[in-house]
Length: 461
Image 1 (tube, rainbow, N blue to C red):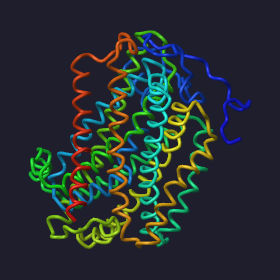
Image 2 (cartoon, one colour; image 1 turned 90 degrees about the horizontal axis):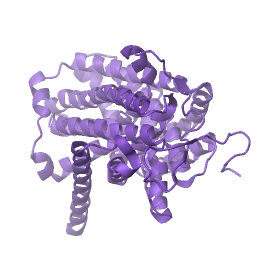
Image 3 (cartoon, rainbow, N blue to C red; image 1 turned 45 degrees about the vertical axis):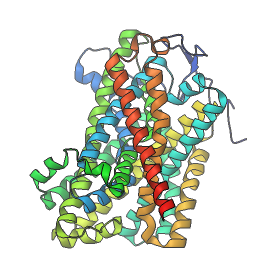
Image 4 (cartoon, rainbow, N blue to C red; image 1 turned 30 degrees about the horizontal axis):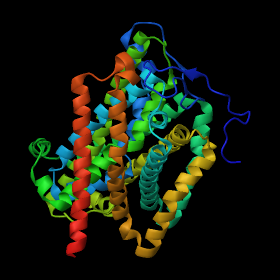
C-alpha cells in the first residue's frame, strides 16, 4: 500500500490539546510528527538568542513569494505598465504578512495546522472539497516551478524545455536528503538560495539604475488598475503569485517545529518571535518581487520594449540594454535558484494538506512524484502543442488560478482565529478580526470581478 498510517517506520505521534473547547475532537495529532517540536529553544531571555532559535520557518514560507510564477507576473507588469503595479506588490506583501501571522497563531495556539482545523470543524464533504481545491493550488504552484526551472536550465545550458521539465523530477532526491538530515538543514539550504536570489537582483538593480521618483510614485495605488481589465488580470496574478494559499497550511504546521513551553506564556512568546521571523523573511521576498518589476520597468518599459512578457526575452535583452555581458547570466542563475528553492517546500505543503484533510500519510518520495507529475504533464503538453512561446502564459495563468483558490484558505483561517471557543485567550482582537474579514472580502471581490470580466469577454467574442 502506498498510503501508510503506522507501518512501524512512522511512530504514533503524541497528542496535543488546544486552548479552547470549540473543536469536535479536543485532542489532535501532531502536524508533521517527524519534525514537530524537535528544534530546542534556549531558556535564556536574551532577545537575539531566542530570535535565532525561532528564525527559519518564515524563510521557508517566503520561498513561495518569490517563485518563477512571480517572475512572470512581475516581468509582464513592469514591461507593460512601468512602475504602476508596484502598489499591487506592496499591497499583496502586507496581506501576506498579516495572513501568515494568523497561520502562526493558529498553529502554535491550537496545536493544529490549518488542514487539521478544517477537517475537525467542517463536514466530510466540505473538507474533501477544500482538500481538492488546495491540491489544485499546489499543482498550479508546482507547474510554475517546473516551467521556471526548465527555462533557467535552457537559458544557461541550452536544454530543450520539454527535457528541462522532465529533469526537474530529480529534485525528489534533494528533498528526501534534506528531510532525513533534519529540518534545520532544510532551512539553511533555503536561506542560502534566498540570499543568492537577493544578491543577484541587488546587482541587477545597481546596473539598471532605476528612477527613484518613478519607483516611489509606483507604490501609490492607481484607480486605473480596476478600470483596465488586462491590468486587473495581471494584478490578480501578482496577488495570486504572492499570497499563496498552500503557504497558510504550510506555515501553520512548521511554526510548530520549535520545542516551546506548553504554557500560555510560552505560546505567546512563540507567536511573537514566529511573527517577527515571518515579517523579516517576507520583507526580503517583497524586495525580490519589487526588484523584478522595477528591473522590467526600467530596462524594458522606458526603452520602448513594452511587449516583453517572456522570461526568455528578458534574459536575451538584459545584457545588450544594460551594456553588461553577464547581466543575463545573473538573471538565469537567480531563476534556477528560485525554482529549486520553491520545489523544496512543495513536498512539505503536500504532505501537510493530505495528512491534515484526509488523515492519510503518503511516502514523501511518492507524494513528490505525484504532484510533480501533475505539473509536468500539462507543461509538456502545452509546450509540445503550442511551442515554447506559451510558457509565460502558462506561468501567469497558474498564478491567477492560485489567486482564485486563495479565498478558500483565507476564510477558514480568519474564522478559526476569530473564534474564542477555538482559540481561547489567543483569539483575534476586534481590529485583527475585522481586518482579516476585509482582506477576505477584497480577495473574493477581485476574483469575482476577474471571472465576470472573463465571462463577458467570452460572450462578446
